[in-house]
Image (cartoon, rainbow, N blue to C red; front, side, top):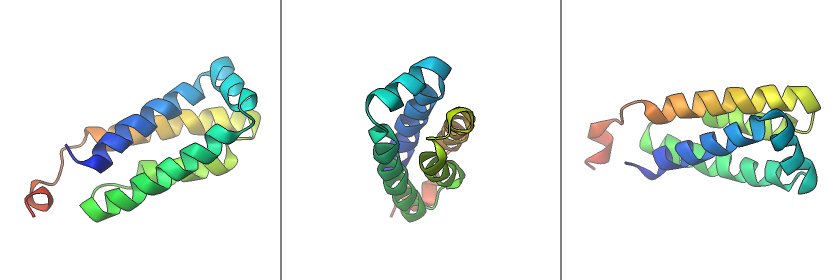
Length: 102
């Protein structure tokens, strides 16, 4: 399993956690919005590694947008949930075997 795929599972799980209505808001507000900055960095690293591996980048791009707009109360919650879904769908797709044999 490639590093980008593992990072998609991790970032998808964290996005799902932040998408839980009261819990996610409590985490973000309690830590003074630093989870959004951390998730932004994680999504950028995931995107770079995904592009290097030739995988799908939809979830990572949506995650970057989510990290930038996640401070908006209800919009952020919906974006976190959508990011989690797209990241986990991308992570569950089969890897390109020809790329991994290089």
